[in-house]
Image (cartoon, rainbow, N blue to C red):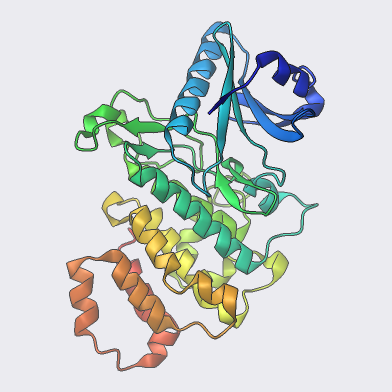
Length: 356
């Protein structure tokens, strides 16, 4: 990757002026940089300055982000790493400029029209693919800070996962102890409550965070809201899912999902419920999630609006779980009452059995 001239980047950001500031992450600030000679617009991330120990910690996080991003091959769902700039051991991270802001802004800003249901499904799949890509990388990478503020949109409104300051990689995938030196970290509301000690770090922590983001995408509710009877979005949504009051979770600003897409939204809520299960063993892998979401769900929404078949959703769910217990149960059942299938009751019964 390119090595950028430090002074050129200082000039391109007007000496990192507030007018070029486009965002703040967990450990640094991001600035818009215009390279007039090359006719390029880039994003520059520099570590935040504070007390000595804070500054040192932020520098380490920026170094970690550079290390993680530079080790990854290009992927359409991961923010693009372009290079670095170093001056007297002070580093700048250069990444692609994402002009359309974050998912957090898209869902919660009052001046921005809320996304359509089909767009929400597309975003959910893009995020799932990004996390799956990290988990399948060599070494395995756990992001640890998956949240709507870290999901950014490019000029074509494609979602990409950003901010890798807290990411952890496992050099030896057969030795989970290589994770243990890392203290728990993340963002309240998105962070897995099971992740309380270093030895509890696993890919399932990211799965929990993804489930929270799914609930946020569908409801447009704040993940933590002190004005809500139940502060956490998980505590608010789970009772509704268990009672099959799924449409009460949907963002009311754009109306209920139309008939051809309602089944997909229901399916995503069931997936979210499994992701945030307090029993980590019941959470699916990101590979299972991507496979389930890709199995005729999103493509059906994009191409045309036929009515969604709950039979196909059940087949997708069966393939996703790959568990003998469920396979036995599903294969032994003849599904003679198709009214239950079209209402999603068979699928719901199987999923709720895993939600504890």
